Amino acid sequence: MNRIKEKFVLLKKRNKKALIAFITAGFPDLPATARLVLSFEKSGVDIIELGVPFSDPLADGPVIQEASAYSLKKGVNLQKILNLVKKLRKSTGIPICLMTYYNPIFRFGEKEFVDQAVISGVDGIIVPDLPPEEAREFIRYADKSGLINICFIAPTSSGERIKAISKKAKGFIYYVSLTGVTGKRNNLSADLKTNLAKIKKFTSLPVCVGFGISGAQQAQEASKFSDGVIIGSAIVDKIRKNLGSRSMVERVAKFVRSLNV
Image (cartoon, rainbow, N blue to C red; front, side, top):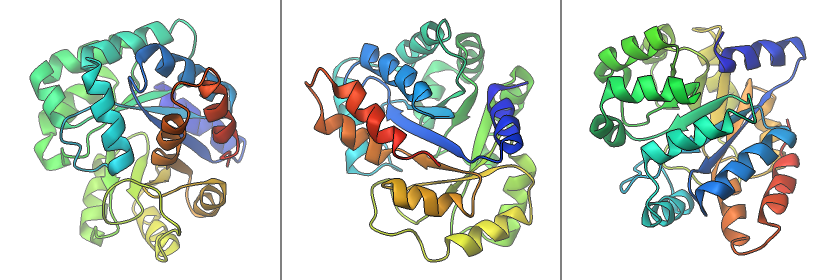
């Protein structure tokens, strides 16, 4: 069974919600990324989402954009990230997803990417600019290879759209809690509970909330109505604020522990 599916089965048995942590791979460098992943596992994170740096990250706000640009300047690319995951698999079995835009996959080659991702130990792929209608061949090959393509649902998605996506979705559904880009927000969307209930009418898959969750209070609130929370910008910002510090990993891990849902 795929590690993501196994994790949600285990969480359900324990009556717990998933904590999914996003970090930009290569920010501040790849060895630090590896240390962060291992420290997050010890800090209660259930699933790791590694962001693949890209020059035009249309779904990301300024914090992740800056981290992505920083990583690109250091020469981090998709192949190096796959190599990193392969090395991590010697030390951890934590589920790992890659969040990337379609261009790096296209340049890499869809089948070659899926093959190498599976060999490296990647469990899931999140591609915000590749809607299911445009990804039939990619999804078919990923499904055949055991790589889970994780689908998005937005606040603006109609009932018909939610139903269509739910039929194609595997692993979990990524609910984008607000319109706009990633980034910290002061408050959760007022219609979060209503929208999550609507989605759950169409699917038995776990539904996890991302975009805009900034701290422990918001994480706890979102987890009341969902099966998990995805936190990225707040974690990446914590890394940014501790660049150059010998205790960066420990400080970020401490912040992550405070987010446990």
